[in-house]
Length: 115
Image (cartoon, rainbow, N blue to C red; front, side, top):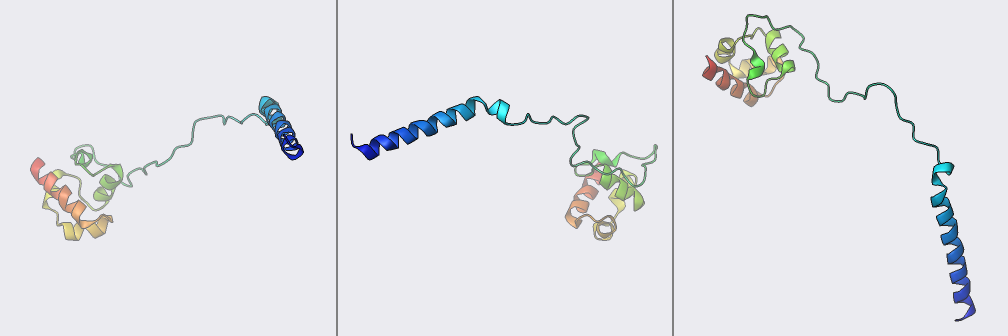
C-alpha cells in the first residue's frame, strides 16, 4: 500500500470514530424534544350553523352533501324542510347559499324523494 492510501484510510477511520462518538452521545448533545401540554390543536373544524334549525323541521343533514354549515345556510335562506327544498329552484337558491348549482340540484332531487 502506498502512503496516500494509508493516509486516506487513517482520516476515514478518524472520521468514522468521531461519527460513532457523536451518534453514541446524541442524547446528551441534543436537547430532548418538547412535548406540548394540553389538548392537541384542532384542524378543519366546521363552523357552527349561523341559524339554529328549529326542532320541528326536517334534518337536512340527512341529505348526502349537506352538513351543519350548509344546513345553516339553507335555514338562513328560509329552507328548513325537505318539502321546501324539493320545491326550491336550484338556479335561484345556489347563489343565495354560495353553493354550486349542480350540488343544489342534487339536494333538491334527494329532498323530492323524501317527501
